[in-house]
Length: 348
Image (cartoon, rainbow, N blue to C red):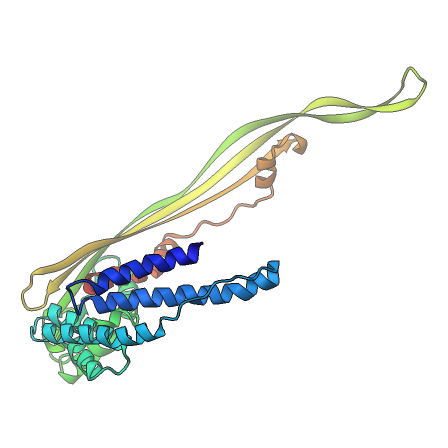
């Protein structure tokens, strides 16, 4: 019942698209509809032998063949995006060049090797790419350098499409080739380095950390439970020897310890135009790291302990992580989150 209804749904969408006035725009959508129908048919063909072997049910359904329709739609969808890319290419702004690159890439998705779309994609992608210079971060020296270096190495294949982060090696090359080291110019002269590297934007960041010292608190808890304290033999009225349990209360005093510490890392950043000095993007990345360890000791009868405290008394006290350990644990995670935020700015 489901398959014919699904086919009907997609056929209705196909009919509406075919009857629409937007002659070229409809072809990418038609490709999606035909591919959806082909996927549905593929699932039916996969399901048939499974039903036959599992429950001996012969599924009488014929999956439609839409390969011919798809083969007709794909070149037209490629042509639509190629034409759109050519229109965007006329405008030299980075945003238009980016849209051009996206459309040339879509044309290649529908028809690999379509006309000269690959060449035009490379050309417009290069024109759309922003070069980002990351200046030294402000904040605790123990982690700012680490986070910055990791950030400069975080680029993924996806983020490289329209964003190029200048690496430490490239910065050193610029400094050495221009003889700037001898002139006393370092990475901190980011405006000068920005011009020489051809950077479009400059990213600066400030890191603020907080630390909560190790604290140990303990509570004393009384535990009491009725248990069998001994067994007693007796002879019942029929003269049969029996045993009965004698109940009694047992007690224990528990010391419940909690050791805790924690730290936070707040990174605020801004991206400025290298030439204009105007704010382009800004944001924050926040990370929190907490440590909590519980254990217990007791005096008295262990039979009085609840299951919870029986588990805790088996634990030993452990060392809490140091302030540096907490900071470094956060510092290892922050570059990836930071990079994703930066990538999102340039992927929109």
